Image (cartoon, helix red, strand yellow):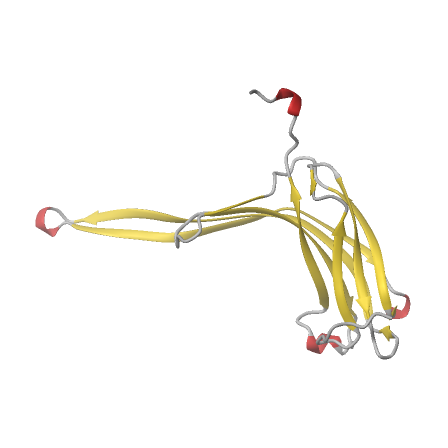
Length: 187
């Protein structure tokens, strides 16, 4: 029998995510499994509303804008330097799948593996992360893709008071890269 690590919610162990490849191309199908480990003293976890998989792609950029203004003339001329941090984020896509709705809200003890499958949109950019370490005003650019497995609790579940929100989840990043045609590479 699975014995969960010490947790804030009795009976709730951990969640692990697995995908079948190290990276994916735009338009490809991503197949994977979410493993839910349950180990309650009563033999089951009660008050579970459902289990879902959330997949999304996000883009984020930050940079510091600098400019100078001047006022007056001659000896009264004053120059002032300004800067401001700009941030931008955009959701590239979002997919949500319900993979399990337990009968009567009960999930038995043990390791439960739930399969999921989704197709990436055909025109998504490659994963990337750019930053210059050690500089306070450096630009940051990130395009990330993630899968999140979520265990949702029903109203009245004692876990609701212990957890922030009505869900318990685990997130895993995965890589998307653009296709490369090795037959047409100039040497």
